[in-house]
Every structure is written in structure tokens, then in C-alpha cells.
Image (cartoon, rainbow, N blue to C red; front, side, top):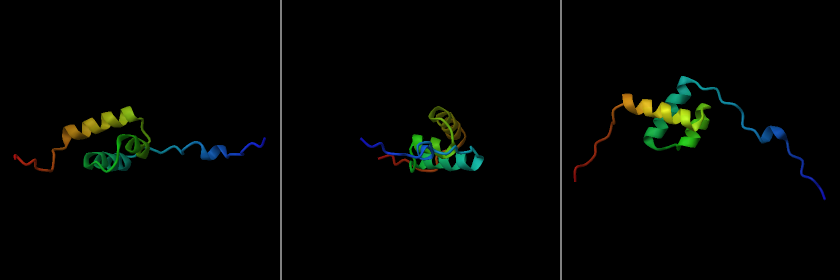
Length: 71
């Protein structure tokens, strides 16, 4: 029986530093639906719960920039 040798460095993703630029990119991507919540949280280095709270704040202070047809 042979064991597969793996590098422990490949198993853990590198820590991402949370910056205002990363958060702005993630919030905009969530608003435009080009990124989902787990990917946005990883992009920012946050937990999903932290990203949800941040996105709710983003929605509170940013008005929609699209029109909904009334038909």
C-alpha cells in the first residue's frame, strides 16, 4: 500500500487581508449578481455572516440604479 504525499501548503488557502477596495469590489459584484456570497466573502477575507452584514449596509445607503418596468 502506498501513501500519496501531499504538500500541506496546498490544503490551506492563503489568508486574504480585508481592504476597503476588496469590500467595494465584492459589494458591487454582489449587487450586480456577478459573484455569489461565499466567493465574495473569500475575496474580502471575511466570514459569510460578516459579508452579509456589510452587504446589507451597502444596500441601505445605495439606491437602485435600474428601472423596473410596470407591465
